[in-house]
Image (cartoon, rainbow, N blue to C red; front, side, top):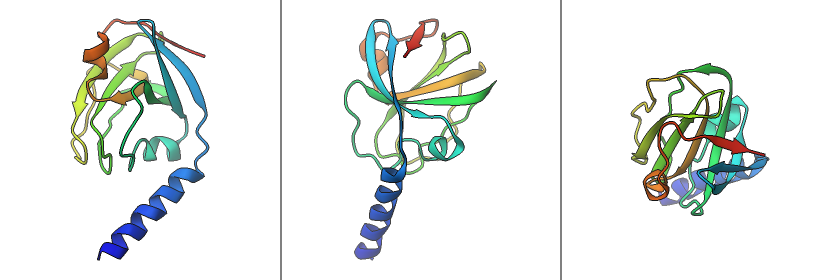
Length: 138
């Protein structure tokens, strides 16, 4: 059984490595974040699964085609995350804080968004990020 589990983790790691994530420099409240870009269904579906760490100022920016209510779960995500929901005017419209790893609870906010930035759990509290803050990226 341990061998099968190791093989599964290896196959998921190889799948992760096959993705070619572009990166953008994201800024919120003068805080720079290096964000991998998830801009298609496959990348958005895989997200930050199977990662056992994330650097302090790193994250993943999910870019959607439409402004909508976007739902996230933490299946196979090994680290707690803050989820920052951003509208088409690059304003934070909601935050899910410290989402519990490896759970299937749908996480969302009550305002439509076009982008979601995932960062380490506790990042928003530590850096004073709140609803209404403006976000930019290059």
